[in-house]
Image (cartoon, rainbow, N blue to C red):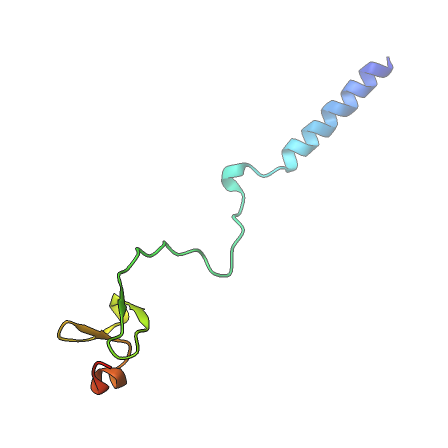
Length: 79
């Protein structure tokens, strides 16, 4: 008899637990302060012709085939 009572209590507890549980597809996703953005592709690094600092090609200030880190160094020319 006590095994029957234990089985009933266990069945009720599982039923309550399953009814309160949110399905995985309906569960709200935890929101992060900054959602991860897609990774940027690697860029070529260029050395400044004046000071030698390496900068990404997209940020380089070009004069002909020489790259500079800023407009001031471009005006000063190669070292």
